[in-house]
View 1 (cartoon, rainbow, N blue to C red):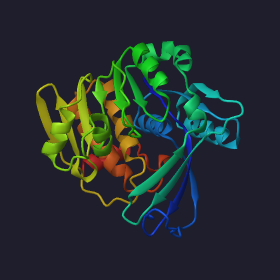
View 2 (cartoon, rainbow, N blue to C red):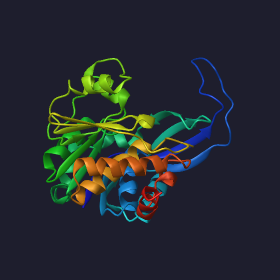
View 3 (cartoon, rainbow, N blue to C red):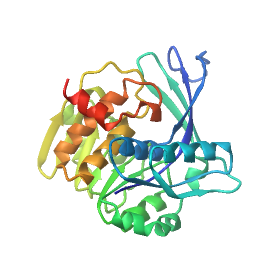
View 4 (spheres, helix red, strand yellow):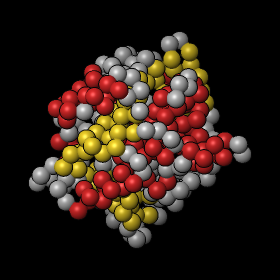
Length: 297
């Protein structure tokens, strides 16, 4: 089983010809609503790829709460530990996507910011039994730290969104930042080259392994003294909104199935690449048979 501790957001997505600079208004296209949030995306990604998944999180007391809960349940995700929060809105994400598929996102956390260590302790049995527990930073640190303490299996932490000064939980087996998040964690400039990424990642301590996702440059895996660059799969991206979440969900499934970290990272890289060829967050997440077919091309 896979446990995901994280956020649920209703995504409001609009295409834009280009991202605005400060003080500028850009006319966008028609707005579309999609279920999203890093926690929900990671949970749905894992479920579509064959994982048995439980989601621990909070929604508000509004119409969006029902939409979000129904969306993840429809994918087979266990929502027994998804709590409603009176007097608080469900999280929202405002997303602008340019013609190259690059996005700019503003998140209003809402109920996600009310997830507590007590919520995680109430789900202690799920966390203890999970082969992999997935964490990210759209919920409070206290929830992540409690979940990591209670986790009985591998802990995967995706430190997103990047927040300078945030210390990842102590019990992290695999840390999965992108370039920007790596820079925030280490207090270094955003690395460009593979060597710069490796140098910045070398400043991290505490995690058993680090997997730095690099978008079109693939990923860099650092485990002990080993360093491995895995190139990206060649695709034409449409929308990169949930690519990182897809990667984390896929990585969790592969690790839960007993694959090595290298094998899991390669498989997750394929799933994430496939997700970028479709618009939306959860609508873009592939099913297992699609990933297997993609790998056979």
